[in-house]
Amino acid sequence: MKNPFLLAIFLVGALALQDTRSREEERLTFIDKRLEVVYPVIQGFKSLITLDPFKVTQTWIGSEICSYRGFHCDNPPDNKTAITVASIDFNGFQLFAPSIEGFIDQLPDLALFHANSNNFGGTVPSKIVNLKYLYELDISNNKFTGQFPTAVVGMPGLSFLDIRFNSFSGSIPPQIFGQNLDVLFINDNTFTASLPEIPGDSHILFLTLADNKFNGPLPRSILRSMTTLTEVLFLNNDFTGCIPYEIGLLKGASVIDISGNKLTGPLPLSLMCLEKVEQLNFAGNLLFGAIPDAVCMFLRENLVNFSLSDNYFTHVGPWCKILVERGVLDVRNNCIPFFPGQRSIEECAEFFVKPNYYCPHAWFHSFLPCRYSHISSSSASDFMPMVAPSP
Image (cartoon, rainbow, N blue to C red):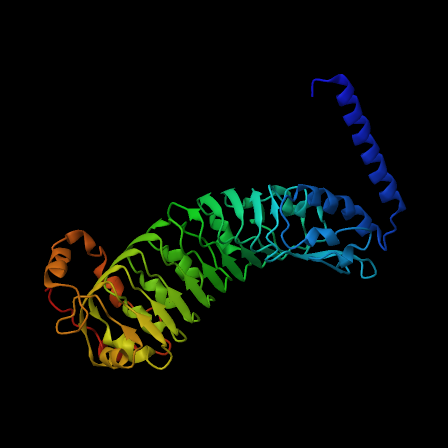
């Protein structure tokens, strides 16, 4: 603004507006000092929002913060007579703001922050580590970037972390798998590199790593440590190598999906140990050999969907044929002789002449980590699969 007269008018107007806002804030009466402290934080964030299709921020006026749409108040754990902003639920509001820094990290009593399906960008503020009551963080389906938000690593109270459908990249800190989380959803980002080996136990119940760019083998330590898992989704990555026998240690899992990767070798017999599995998906890999009939026999009562399509299996035994007939087992587009919907002889032959698909430790596929529980080694040996010759 080159005209000094116009500049002076602009500055006088800005100062007058600021003075008006200051007088308005002086007239506001808050029911608790904690609400008075967070009022300017909320108003500052409101000024950053450039898109509000549902006119949510129009309710963010005055001292009745507990009536603001998306804000919820409660008594903080350290003072049962105080009133504070305890949780925020912006799910589906489609708000647009370049950052949440200076907002979420300045609400000291925040316990839940749910902001699914908005247009928030930038990185996750490092100061959220100071939010001592935060136990649920959902920022899925936004436009966040940068590395994995390491500020959440080591937050002792955090039990729910959902950062799906963003543009996070890089590697995953191994400590997050050993944290006291119930839910860890990091799918549909652009994380790369191999998954880390982790020490100790994990308490995660629901783990979703799908639709990233993870590569390398499935970490045996993660499978070994996550015996509490109920659902695990590794689909649509670039995992290679053979399926480790430790997958049989997920005896509490009802859903396991490792489809759409580059895993090879035979199915491990340790799948027999999956006592509660209902959904089992290995479709779209490079698996081959006989489908272990013992797996079909031992899992037949609970299995609802067992997909092995788009692999290179060559043999189906009687128990597995029963599951095929029931519509439970999908073996389409494999190399099973005389079965409908299989690959061509040429395609199968081309696959089996490549030696790099074979596993370095052949005994892994027959090892039973649960041999002292519901499956005895003698009963397992009765169902040892015979590997059919290559077509």
